[in-house]
Length: 281
Image 1 (cartoon, rainbow, N blue to C red):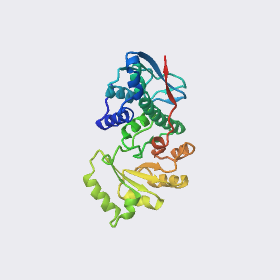
Image 2 (cartoon, rainbow, N blue to C red):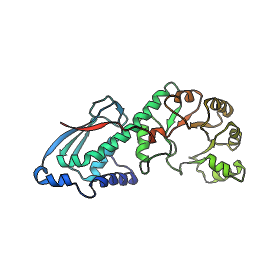
Image 3 (cartoon, rainbow, N blue to C red):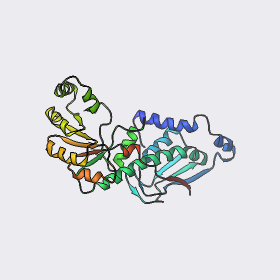
Image 4 (cartoon, helix red, strand yellow):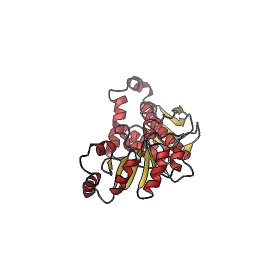
């Protein structure tokens, strides 16, 4: 049985509350006639995809107290062809129908994230560069979207502000003190398990980031030509992350420039949902 952190369970409860919090007029109307009717269903994607969200559906069933048995036929992170059943549900007909929309919403979105992530990973095949999510996630959905990225073969960036100290361009531009003094203050609070990342928008900013002994240098919205120059300038002294303007069409060129990490919000914020339906057996 799947168990998620409390905040994720609260999110899934809220998703159920949206549909069922004020009752189920259809289910209540048919309860006397169909309340004991039991049926079997299959969950079927209408297009090829990477599956994600099966564990979340299992959790929805548990949280909602539905009289439904859930049997995965696939697994989160598995690639499937169109019209390949990924799960079965058997139970009270009215319970399955009450659960249907919320369950499919979760599967469609998370499988979309996993599928787009996998496309980015495939596009970089032959390189050692990792594609990672960012903190640009839907409110409350970060844990689930992060897991979907992992299911798609991607990797994790910092989960939240407690995991890494990042000096972004807007902070650096607002400073009235030297960058190395600021980083010294940050390192006093930074645990040995966390990293210091400094964002650079231009090649001219890189020497200061190296002087401050950044663990990670983020090259933001730079041209491919400038990134190639930055890789040579950094010369292995820091992990190199690239972000901004990354697409499926250009991601391999950026990876081949020699960067370590490519971070993109596309995989969490722009992933199209997968068409998934619930079919009667």
